[in-house]
Image (cartoon, rainbow, N blue to C red; front, top):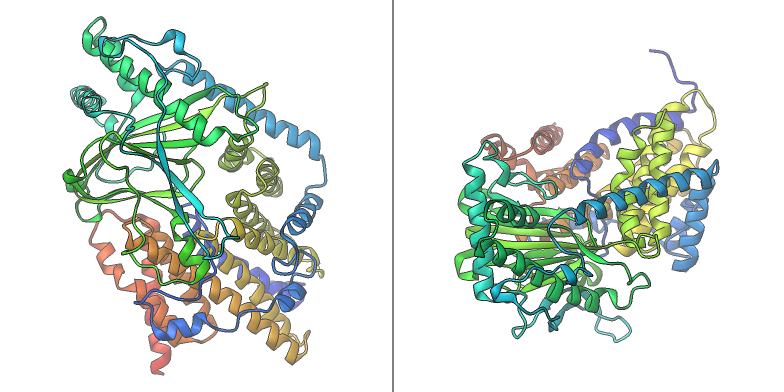
Length: 617
């Protein structure tokens, strides 16, 4: 094998990046990442695990020294820190900024225009379409209805200086979005549509969607397809007019006024015409889902506001509801012992009632374990005002389109920098977008891996080390905005681990004094342990409330166990890996687990066996 010309600590990073890339593939398979602040753990996590997690956490001063050419998240004012971080990113993207940025934003604007054009071709009305309102006998008058609602909030501190965080809005008993006979009309309409699909060549269409995550036990139908079906197959009949008129009245007189009053009244860009980006009936059938429960994984919606309308009684199903990532804020920020008894999924008050939330807020459809749960979800967006799309929509599209748009770049280098640029632009639109900071950090981490491989023949590690430090700083910045994202913390642990391996190799080369290197390595090790531990804690809480986070939970356990085993802390690794390794045989016996999940469990099981053998020696 030809020897690398790098100093050993540079070559060591090369090996590390290969390993980290393999493990990271597990974490990124669900396009997710993590963060939090609590050092208390859920009861089933072992005492020895807690002791490992409580290992020395770096001081502000030591981390400031380590991130010397980036910005410490612990010693700089938030606004100043954010500005300085973005200046570092801009230095990396110095060439051709304006032209490239304008081209990217032009693509995004075109996407927005195409979506608005598509929405106008559907039978669902825009906010200003009152003149085209369909009139049915039951809906002969059109009048905006004032929707009374309550805010569902969590409090992260007992002091008044920390305001409560609003999770969602929920309609009050006096003003449901649909009354009983209206929910009956819509449920009968979707049942008729599904029966039609089952009798045609498209008999699997109810289980496919352009928009949602598919899970066994879920059936779906787009509201626009149902209205169009009734227009085509029941033209001139009373039923067709009834369905169309009801949908028009629901949107024009109830949903749009509620969204504008509750969400857009304080926005700078509030003049855009509201419309439905998509609207989907979802049926969660616990019987068809068998043992896993019927639900949706953690995700964010496209659109601005998501409105979730309950269509059947709670008496008809067990479980279900929407669980929001930010419901964990009191546990994560205050170090509480939250359990499934005091953190529960949110549900509307009853059939016809709704909860509404920002589409960008990460949430999950908690598993329905018995019976059938029917909902109608409306994803409401706003058309561009004054030929300019709303900033929140531009940011969402920049994040979601980064990999697709950048795949056309002529080189790997350009692809990676293109991704960095997309997420940098998203932050420019919405500076407090934690997901954009997260994705920016991960794009930089991938760029670091590329630079390591590219610069094997160079003696200077300064550039690749600065990129790694910048990636860590951006991930740390993300944690200030999305402190309950378990994936983020997992990826932050991976990034800190790379830095740990780098300094460990420097110590072996005697490039640092023993005392200095010992303190620094101990501090960074504490950061790695805390990040992975937080990821495990967050995902444990999600599992308790019926959210499908198994793959992310298993990945965090594997990554942490691997890190400890490389430190020869085999007992600590066994404690962590034992949390998931026992699930390997169970996963092999079912067909519901993804290939990636099986690979994670297999690797965890193999690593657990290795660690046990080391202890027995």
